[in-house]
Length: 165
Image 1: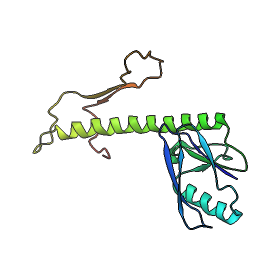
Image 2 (image 1 turned 180 degrees about the vertical axis):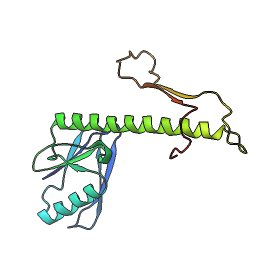
Image 3 (image 1 turned 45 degrees about the horizontal axis):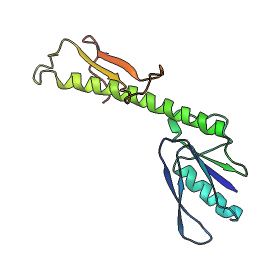
Image 4 (image 1 turned 30 degrees about the horizontal axis):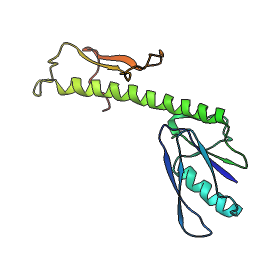
């Protein structure tokens, strides 16, 4: 048996080719849930499906540590279902990855904006201060949890202009 879990906030339409039939099967896996797939298939077919899953970002539930840089929110398990705790942990890992990416993008955007406002001929800085502030808006009637996104990035005028954009 093969179980596939979705730890993302979006529903996942998993497309797999079942080797025995040669047909593509589409399996919907809702956010935070898992599905049993490949029931009754041979070990070679299950191995083929696992290889497909790994190629497209799914990780083995048996891995003790999920590294946020190479995890996209999908888990698989051979023999037994993925525990709800593991799906929750995987979701937290994915959120951590997204937050890091958000901060990196804000820093790159601040540097790019600062670079775009320089005088084209002399390279002299035209703005005395370049700053980007990111604040997460809450939907109406939703209370703050303290985990909302809020940060500010300032480009120092004495800093280097050799930033990888």
